[in-house]
Length: 600
Image 1 (cartoon, one colour):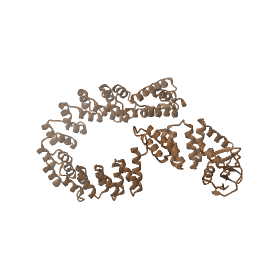
Image 2 (image 1 turned 120 degrees about the vertical axis):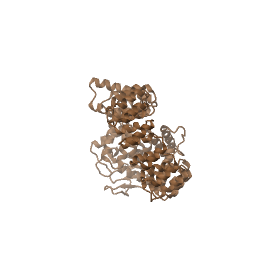
Image 3 (image 1 turned 30 degrees about the vertical axis):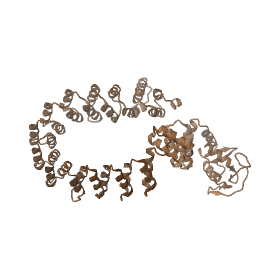
Image 4 (image 1 turned 90 degrees about the horizontal axis):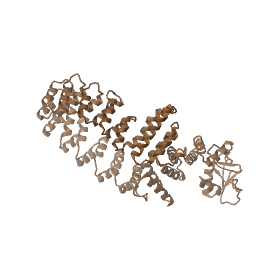
């Protein structure tokens, strides 16, 4: 189990995973560790090939379980999705494309980077007649192919998947092939429409517009027409709104576009005309005119390109969503900051905050803003900028930020250390070191619920780290999750944690806490000495007593603290101490309490 826990060699990690194919926990831990330490995508890919070779050999030997076979593709994709983003080696990319073993998103990323025509054609042939994922991937590969003869063959074959034919239609340059497809009324209308948009023969395009029955084919033909008078006539007089709309998108005259906007009964034509009108003031007035159809107003909003006009629209518009859309296009930082402080809509103020990219301004907002939610969010963004709390400035990697947190702890700067640890986690959510640092700081501050979350994540990342299970168990005990805390302590003991084993030994005897007379669960036994036990809850109360330095005891009925006399400590037998916590029959001194929390 521990053979790869601290291993920094990707190939050996893969070997460890391959050697334990039936143990999902070990294999997943090895693969995650590999992703954390690998610095080059080629390194990961080499490990991947070693892993798949090991799987193939194990399958042939007949000892690979069905569960591993079923999860094989998922594990491959987990490994490869990280590498593919940075992978540039064409030889490796071609090999991976030819394997066709990964999930669709990973394969699409590989195909987009691939320049090997043979590998791309192989992918097309694999899925050219498939209407599902294979067909979709084949269509993606078709876009990357340059062989015009092959593309034309894909296009003219009506049995080819529609995604592939669409892609081929965009790539084919042979006008004769395109014209033949466009003229075939028995062919798919969507494909014919795409083909028609590529035709350059103006006479043929007009013939299609005038004689074709399918509106999508007609619209495709309109896209290729360059005769402005002909387009204007279509925009005003055609029987189909779709054709009118398409013609309007290609009209250049501002005067005609304004006339279309005012005179056309079609809202879609009005909207298309607006998108081509250059008068920004006119567009602003239309966007603000609530008597205009909402679809036309939205088109007007989208047509605003001038930032000053965009600001004016933002300030005058009444619809919240319209204002949020306008805000997204505004870059003036002074204006954005003013919105953060002064806008009347809380959601708008919150939307403006992420646009603030100056840490000094964010710091001011975090300290001075009247809205607690805005202040909290500004502080979160500050953490992302890694400012004011990290002595390590360059490079601001997750590992350096975690190291910075440790340095800040040594200096006693606990709050800054928390921020540095959180920033490290934001950089790399799988950095176990940062998780344990933040969890420890939260636990010491009494934030047991937050600490529990971090310990759980730490265990997910480092499942073989015994003390992590014990630490999480202790926190769960403080939260009252006794059943789960007991299970966590057993896991810690199974991984060799001596303190966990000692705690389990006491519980197995069925002992009770001598302070509150409760049956002690696995984790609740915090201290056992001379046959005397004290549970975590009572130890927590004892810590409060010791902190107050007041001789006081613990009520048998667990109703709080009660004053009592002093006597010998039941754990260390000392008679000299500063404070004694006394239950009446047993007692614990301040030194034993302090010692426990030092160990903890």
